Length: 333
Ligand SMILES: Nc1ncnc2c1ncn2[C@@H]1O[C@H](COP(=O)(O)OP(=O)(O)O)[C@@H](O)[C@H]1O
Ligand SMILES: [Mg+2]
Image 1 (spheres, protein in one colour):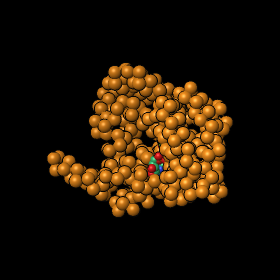
Image 2 (cartoon, protein in one colour; image 1 turned 60 degrees about the vertical axis):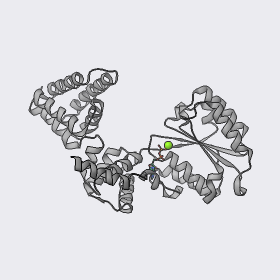
Image 3 (cartoon, helix red, strand yellow; image 1 turned 30 degrees about the horizontal axis):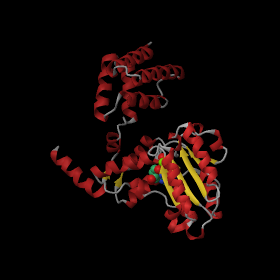
Image 4 (cartoon, protein in one colour; image 1 turned 90 degrees about the vertical axis):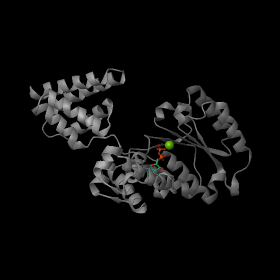
């Protein structure tokens, strides 16, 4: 075991000093994977070198920050950093700080004869409604010389007066094909060997989040330059589909005690928390062919309840046992 850790550490120093998510971040709008509706519209802005205020909404790891940087680079070329002010709203909770930075930045005219400068406010939904109200006034004040790009997870958390001043772009979870393509490109470029079923496992655990996919790939590759399917599941706290199916089968065929033992083994082996297990089991439920549609609906309701109780602080062992008991009951009726 000691040798193994030593081995990891050595590879770590070689491979972990640069994050692949940064190294392989698309530099131009045209390199962004998936998001066809977004890319199409942003390409027009890149071409015209002009655009209105923008609001990027969507789940994590789907390319919002990437798109903001890529568009800025497409519009301003190599010197884009001179015309870009980047702020993260979850770091700069005080609007006063934002106001001061914007003021400072907007004072000088755009670099290299550009028509405007870009202010990128990442995770804008971290701002309170009051702060957003003040932000709106800042946007108006500097509208002549600055364009704002804001990102958020949910556009509904951004106040209406800001939404109505922006062109809104919705980012979707990336498709399997897009994630697979990027995983294979990065693997080739980093000269690692990845089995096909390992690449598909990366796609499965990513759930359309490219950051999650590339991070999982790098973590596994740091252990061994030949990445296997098992490594991906073991390093991402994800149970492989067949293990979840076996648990369900055990509930039906072998009864409570056997199923309970299997569940405990799964949690240990893959390092899952109770809520991880419930959520992964829920996703896998729809791939089982030995359950009726009605049974799936029943079990979904049950899992939602157990998940809620776990989140609310119900004891993990007890809640998971209760779930196993009820699944056994439902499947053997
Ligand atoms: N659509 C995409 N195409 C290619 N790579 C992507 C895409 N979306 C995300 N990535 C990769 O994932 C990383 C995180 O993406 P980011 O744009 O920061 O996500 P977020 O939507 O959370 O702002 C990027 O550095 C990039 O390597
Ligand atoms: Mg981001």
